Image 1 (spheres, rainbow over the protein chains, first blue to last red):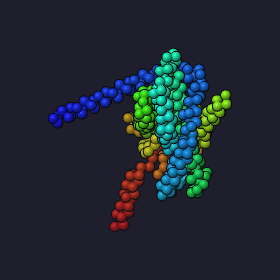
Image 2 (cartoon, chains in turn blue, cyan):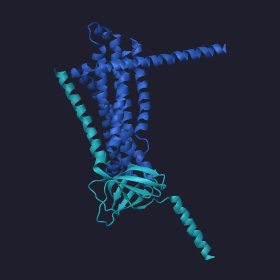
Image 3 (spheres, chains in turn cyan, purple):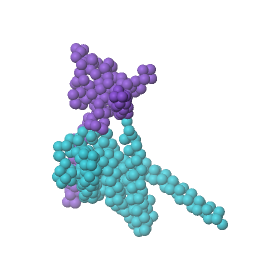
Image 4 (cartoon, rainbow over the protein chains, first blue to last red):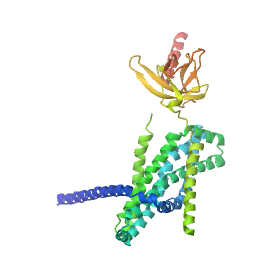
Length: 265
Length: 157
């Protein structure tokens, strides 16, 4: 009896893992198909521009406000710790490096996944549920080229811009707290930061990270929408899956990329 | 139509904002301090102990950064560290320049300090510096201090 229970459990586990692997394969083929059919997204750039608006522009407020608060917290906490070692002037370096290397790309991507990713999944899922995708196929319009690919490129284009904005506004937030509120020397703040942040090592790597995150998040969002069960409950579960899977993917990719880029010399 | 115009305006504004943020990060936050290999010439130096010197550490003369450490290797014949420096092409140093490994601040990162000599001939690409001084190793300093103290105590008796 015990053995039977264990056996069923293992069977179920195996079936789930198998299902996940099959889904991953399907998602990869979908990704490849999206890339191949991207011609329309660029020939009719209007489609992509609309998606950049819905994914990027509408995320501006949440990105800007979060960045401001993250920068301010970094400035505050950084100052509290550094002042104990007499290195209060290094708070600019701390804020800038934390943001450009890690927090900018990662937090912006997480916010993007929750806001824009879930919106994309819900939109495509609803199109599937109301049979708009099937209707397109009937009219010989490829739904992947017309619906999926523009959203993918819209997300990929918006992500690095949002991440850079996050870093810039965060640094400004750190400046507000450290220099204006607490009284760290302004010249020391900026000059130490400029001395420590390297264009190629830090800023460029941060932007590369955000591009990779953009690809991952938008791919997951578009695929989950396309693959959603065409009911109301199915769409809601797909949206949840998008946010959860994207967040995990972002954090895992962040670790892999950081290990590659910032290995000690 | 009207809605389209607003859309384009907002997207244009968004892209411009993002580009401005990238520009801000590139110009006001970062410094492209890394010297491109083509803008410099390579000079080698052998040290008995490089301490905590790392690749891409600055090479300074009179406190100003004139180059970067390009490579650090171990010579298995002389059992010394061979440090290759990439010095900015704008600065020429005489052949008898000496190199010291110094620390910025008390516990900061280590860098190479060049003190110019008086030779009329300048260093060329691929030359080796003859005069070097290794890094100060804290343990050796403490050992030396304790030995001196013990020697003083012995003398007093």
